[in-house]
Length: 139
Image (cartoon, rainbow, N blue to C red; front, side):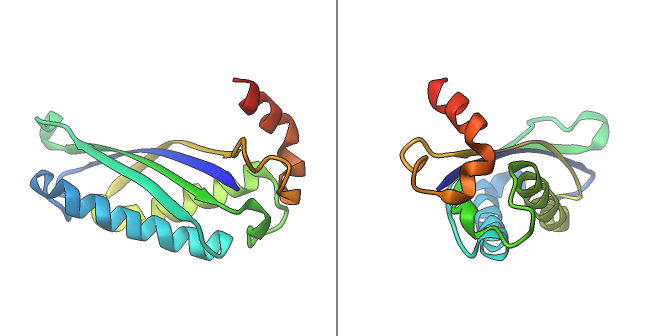
């Protein structure tokens, strides 16, 4: 299994969701990320979605920050080559395109995909990422 972290910033004059509806917005994003995991990894688990809206929109633009954590099976990645960089890029592109529908302008700050420490030896698809995995486990 792999652990996925995504951090996104969104800016626009109007969002499809209100800052008063944070819980609903988080559920919508969770559903979207679940679909991305199904498309790219034949499934996965969204552990947490946290959305924080800025209290006062600067220059008339609304702003929010979205943090996502999830788990997926890297060996089931649908695209080739099955390397970490390719997986992270595909996740970024997929999530960004879906979030634009709700939040307008989307900037993905970070997508990080790392092997889970418990599943390190169980996943042959992670052999491409073993150096990163050992560094992750040590940190």
